[in-house]
Image 1 (cartoon, rainbow, N blue to C red):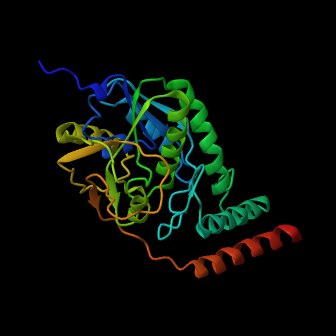
Image 2: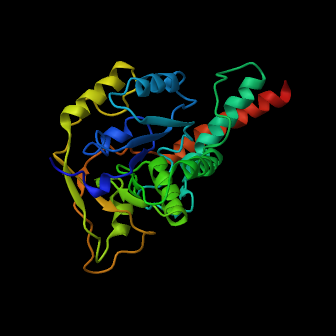
Length: 295
């Protein structure tokens, strides 16, 4: 009988959204001691939180819990062509301001009985910053010295602002609490510019494990059955995953540095015309505020 690997002793996956624990930690999902998922609800998708809760309750293994934090809506708000890191994750680009104009216009229209009333309580930026503190507070109560904590990498796998934020939270808590922090090895064309800042001369010894495709399909079927699977239906699981001790803050790459093996895949990167979004959003907000003022 094989002894359990040391890196899986006292182990936990901390994943941002339900199904992230499967997509990026397939090889260890069945075997870790505990799984913690951060987010549940998202205001723009009514009912999603209930579907996710049902899926997690139906999860085909024990020890899965959720912090029940609401998503900030920051996905797609960073400038992934030239991403800038911040203490709470990533600096958000103009896209977050455009969304705030839309939010304000909806609020104004709602006050005069016009338009859609479903609207975020806070701006994307405020929600993103508030979530950092919420996640930090809740995880500080759950994590202990010596644990093996597996989470997202500092470029957010395919480039997700909330994945990056969760890494930042755990990066700080590692120094405060004293656990071992491990990261996933997935990357895409969108997130590669940020990943390249984590080239290292001595990246440490990665752990290579075969993925558990049978269990992956079992878990994916639960999310699909509860109508909260967020990934592509034709996704093909990689054969292996690599885990590496998480690095410190990123830096400008130097000669002769390298990354450990990556599970690199492509993702669609929408072509945006920010000037058009700005014009439309500003006009909508201005019109709504004028109506509200005249009412």
